[in-house]
Structures are given as structure tokens and as C-alpha cells.
Image (tube, rainbow, N blue to C red; front, side):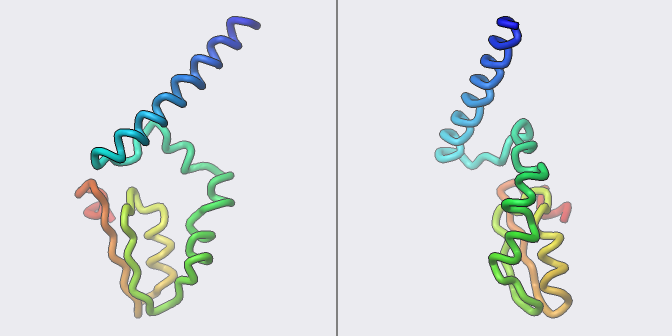
Length: 104
């Protein structure tokens, strides 16, 4: 039991260091979100708190609007956003990694 506790503690400590290190470095260098912490963004709890539909509702996106998605990433928000502005609107996607908007 004690061994399992220490393994869990080391895992939490390592994850915390990774997140703090990424946050520190991302302020100095243009870094994208590391794949190791995507699970923090892509889960049911986050979807309920700050999911695509929640964000679009808060931003009051309506048909016909021109919208910029800066830091679009893999398109978690931009796909529902494009459906929200419909044919009369326009959506522009930007990301630090050039291959991301090209995929969209």
C-alpha cells in the first residue's frame, strides 16, 4: 500500500513539474499544447464547463458574423463555430503551428 502511495505521489509530482515547466517555457517561446496534457482539455467535465457549445453561447456568436479563432489547434471550437455562423458568416483560423489550419 505504501509503495502504491509513493508511485502515485511521484506521478502527480512529475505531472505538476511538466505543467509548470510548459507554462514557464511557453511564456518565453512559442509552444503548442503538449500532447501529454490534452486529456485535461478533452474530457467530459471540461466539455460541460468550457466546451465548444458553452463557449459559443457565452460569446453570443450569431449567423452572419465574421469570427477569428486564434490558436485553433485541432479544431475543437472552429467546427461548431462554422456551423454557428452559417453560410453568411466567415471564420478565420490561426495557429502557431502552420499544419493545424491547413488540416481544417
